[in-house]
Image 1 (tube, rainbow, N blue to C red):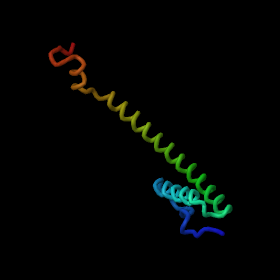
Image 2 (tube, one colour):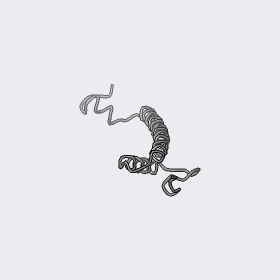
Image 3 (cartoon, rainbow, N blue to C red):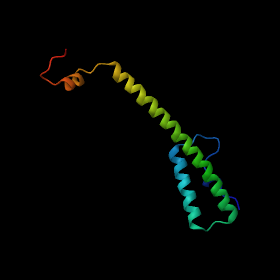
Image 4 (cartoon, rainbow, N blue to C red):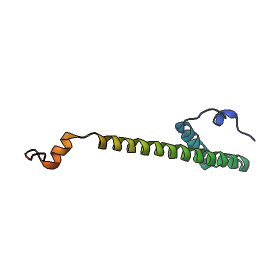
Length: 97
């Protein structure tokens, strides 16, 4: 017996990470209840595997973006002198040379 379309994520539409995680949690809950037929269980499992792959991909891309932004911020911070940081290194009563 096939599930209704309302129980699956929309095909061809952009789905958020949060929507994918919510659907994955729903699938796990249904599988844990144990009231699905063998075919329904396999279909739920297949959909869950696809969602895990998609979520992993989204997280990987987010990690790359964060690393890029962090490196960009670090290089910008290194390019702009921070007089307060220099004062902390040498102490408030030391001369800058």
